[in-house]
Image (cartoon, rainbow over all chains, first blue to last red; front, top):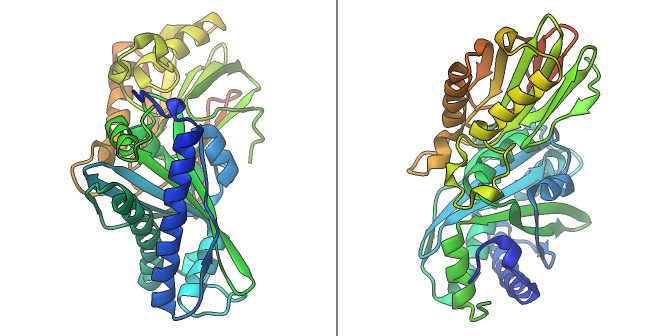
Amino acid sequence: MLQSYEDLNDVHVDALSEIGNIGVGNAATAFGMMLGENINLSTPHVSIDDYHKVIDSIGGMEDIVAAVIVDYFGDISGSMVFAFPIKDAQGIIAMLMGQDPDNTTDFHEFGELQISAIKEIGNILASSYLGSIAQMTGLLIDISIPYVSIDMLGAVMASPLAEYAATQNKVLFIEGSISTGSRDYATHMIMFSDMESLQALIKRLGIEA
Amino acid sequence: MIKPDHVIGISDYKVSKAPSKLVTYALGSCVGIALYDDLTRVGGLAHIMLPDSSIMLDQKKVDRMKFADTAIPDLIREVRMNGANVARLKAKIVGGANLFQRSGTSSVSNIGDRNVEMVKNLLATQGIELIAEDTGKNFGRTLYFDLATGDVLIKSLDKDMKSI
């Protein structure tokens, strides 16, 4: 029986990566429909790592990020957290809004439109990944509205860590990128879930330890 | 800007003395606790993530620096071992924000408030006077602690530096 993220082995990580691949396909379709042009999402890289290391690989504690949280609930529950380094966030928003990628809107000038665009990115990525989990497992999963914060990386990570990394220090980290034309932007996603949900997911995938 | 010589990470603490300068970056819902004895100029800084270690079923596995109820007694013991007089210790606390302003039933939505409340209770229990705080609201804070003076400087995104 799985007791913590540290118990996840290569087979589990491979399965979660495969879910990621399907999720990315769903997300690319969703973005394509929204934008009417081709968006490429890279094959995601899934790893189980100490949260300190995950924060370091996204950026420095004080680096400004646009972060989105989408909570999920139903048969399994937890939170998907996305942290976009602010330059990438500005680029992705320009892409979504059909702006010149060399002339992005600085985050200080963000209005409701830009904030909605960030929320929509989080919403699409979360529902695509969770949708592929639901497709593969038959689990019923519902998601919350997206919540946004633009602040220092360490500060935005604190509350989901407090909720889900209280009793252990590992998290499920999913790295990828989103590109259009010659532009490439990093997507960093952390899937937080409680242990019962992780156990249920692994069991449904038929790869119980 | 003071140049720090010790960086305290999430779930960590450090004790030192003048002229040391300590920093902990990007407190969100976490709370930074600065303790200072202004006579010996010995002090310590902790960055806690959660209020209460009793959620750990296996107490032997508790990461003591992660929780207020274990980190604060440890921090006090260590400043004392480094020459501070506990009766003279004064505290300043920073952080405990709620960045995403999430609604709903999740207990995480008020984790910042719970951290601040627990830290205040523990300091009161230990007889340590809280002389200043900058807590709550919806933004992150970096805390600089100058052990030469006991000053705490707070840096936030797009805000003026604040001294408490």
